[in-house]
Image 1 (cartoon, rainbow, N blue to C red):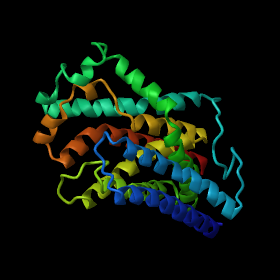
Image 2: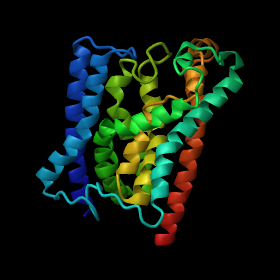
Image 3: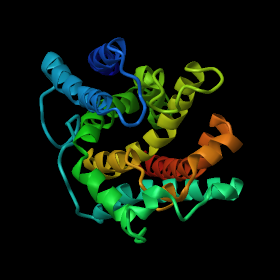
Image 4: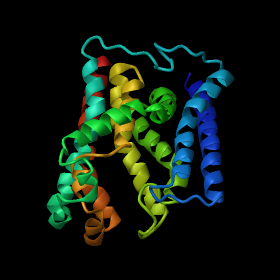
Length: 291
C-alpha cells in the first residue's frame, strides 16, 4: 500500500512542480521581477497557485483514485460544522491575523522608532484603524480561490499521502520542505524576502522551507481536525493578505536599517512558531489517543 502511495505522490509532485515552475520560469524569462506592485507578476503568481489543484485532478485521473469529495482518500472538499468543528473554522480565519499582529508588536519592541501613527497608509482609513483587520480578513476569505488551488493539492493530496508513508511528524517536515522548494522560483526573484541579503537566493529558499514547515503544521492541524481543506484555504488566504493595524503603523525602512533580513524574519515569525508548536503537541496527543 505504501508503494502505491509513493508512486501516486510522485506523480502528483512531478505534475505540480512541472506545471507551476513552467509558469513561474516563463514569467521570469519574460523579465518579470517582484516589486509588490506588478499586477502582471501577481497574475502569474495567482495562476501558479492554481496548479497544485490542477495537478491533483490530473493525478487522480492518471491513478484512477476517483473524485470522492469526502471520506478516506477523498479530495476533502466537504464541510462539516458538527461537533464544534466550526470553532476550527473561526480559528483558521483569525489566527493568521493574531500571530502576524503579535509579530509586529515584537518588531516595535525591538525597534521602537519604527512605530508611527501618521503613516500614509493608515490615514487612508480616516482614523479608523479598527476597520483594517476586518477588511483584510473578509477580503482574503472572498478572494481565497488562489489559496484553494494550493490547499486542494498540498493539504488535500500531498499531506494525507505523506502521513500514510512516514507518519505525522516526519510528514510535517518533509511536506514543508517540498512546499518551500515549490516556491523557489519566486524566492529567486525577491517575492518572499527581497534580493538584498547575504546568500541570496539560497538562504531565502532555506528560510522559505522553514516558514512552510511551521505554517504547514498549522494548515495540517486545521485540515486533520475538520477532514476538510476549507479551513486551510481560509487560513492560507488570510496569511497571504497581511493588513493588520500595526502593519499600517510600521516604517519598514526604519526596521530594515536596524535589522538584517534574518533578524527581521525571525522576530516577526516567533508568534507563528509558537502557534505551530502548540498545534503539533495537540496533533500528537490525538495520534497517541487513537493508537
